[in-house]
Length: 112
Image 1 (cartoon, rainbow, N blue to C red):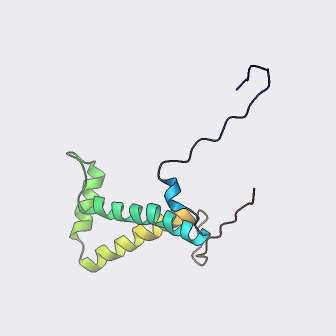
Image 2: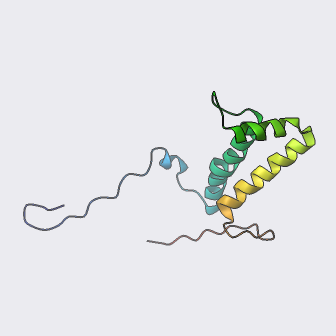
């Protein structure tokens, strides 16, 4: 942005997304917990919800087939599928290079 005297002025940074300030000052552990709740938990819950009851008037045939299979399972097997959905969601969010032994996420902050 130019000013009338010919100098350039830096634009201010855009405002953070609405609701971002609700986090306030959080620790890295608290931040990870929020991300886990917003991503991992929701993804796993939504996966199981779609398996139970496919959304829409005409869900895709693959979705219907999976739903029929899921609903034919016993309760213990449906619980196992829900655990697999949760594990897959966790790995997609926090473990891009799968490692069955490492379960620790580290966040490093840089002081400005």
